[in-house]
Length: 560
Image (tube, rainbow, N blue to C red; front, side, top):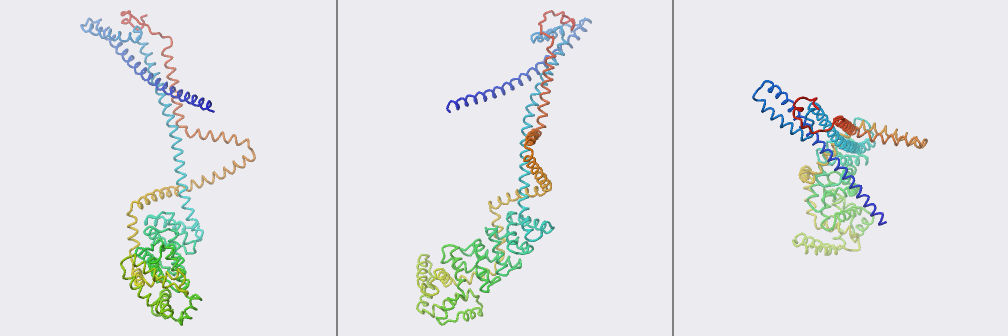
């Protein structure tokens, strides 16, 4: 194994060395051709000047002019240079033509090498651009297809597939995405969730902008927000988009007024609103009371889920058989007392908490007095540690064998008794809350994270737009390819030999993608060949001879 590895390294090194040597050889030839071409052109130019001087000297000499001697000196100097370079000075015209061909040969070969090099690069670049272009088409097509799939899913559920209403819905969702800064597909998912839960499409589209505001501004989940909105419509009976916005304003306000955040309310409202509806509490009352009560419950709970569960258990106990019996045993008409509280302006939820205090007073006056005293002290205590100790003591006092023995129910009552004033304050302020959604949205969109998120969304939407524009072509291509692929599958199954031909064809197609570069390479090879022929023609039958007969050189091109 080691020997094989060593042999592989040796072979690999040899190959690498050979490739490197080949590159150096080509570079050397190109450099040499460049130098040869330049030299040939310089000599050709010198011969041209020499032939001109010779003619001028002849005329001057024949006329007996004084300048003939100076012309002769220049002429002989040029002839000396040409002799050193191996030029047959007795045949200047022929040498001029030969050097012209040699220069042309070197230039053609140099051009050929350059064209081959450019052709290779162009071929590689063409393939790269083709791959990049194909990849870009695939990305845009998929982005468009993914979005269209969500839109079509909504349209099918709403019964408007392939209609103008589907197109209007798509445009509206895209506009909402841009206006609010929420991802296009995420806005579509919210609408899909609402329609999937049975909401009318028109209603869902009316709710979408305010839902998107809530999602971005409150950092909530789109799905949770959609479920909360569905519950607000179904359980709280809020169907007017303006009232819905007011309800979400209240939720946002309450979320910022305590430890139970708006995003947690979005998760828990669907369950709790259903319980509120059973108690006859709907509309904005359901929203303000539920949100305020959850903030109150956080005073005795460790987490949002614990607070919500405590309240959920309390609501489920309202009007239950064992509760009614326990109150009856204490001499209290449960339903009548609840009705009295309701007639006094309380909701069933609020009346149930007030009735609980009466129950404790009736069954254990001493405990009720201690509870009232403890509640007053807790409210005034500034030291958190002491307040917590008092709260624990109050909870222990409520731990009896009656209906408040249930830990969650007891915690719910404790929280309300201790924070009744806070509850009333939050409920009142939430009912009149306004502008919170827009304010939070603006604050959220001013963060770097959101700005970059929207930049990415804009880029993604650009891909979607391009994908939409070319969809007729890409869909047609997909349909055509499906037909072809099915045909190939059938052909492969029925005629395996034909597959070999198809494979060869595929190889040919891949070659065609580089045809432009290949043509340039071809032209380069052609020019190399032309340059080689020209070079051989320039050398054929001619040998360089150093001529020392000055008179022969000056006498004419036919002198031997």
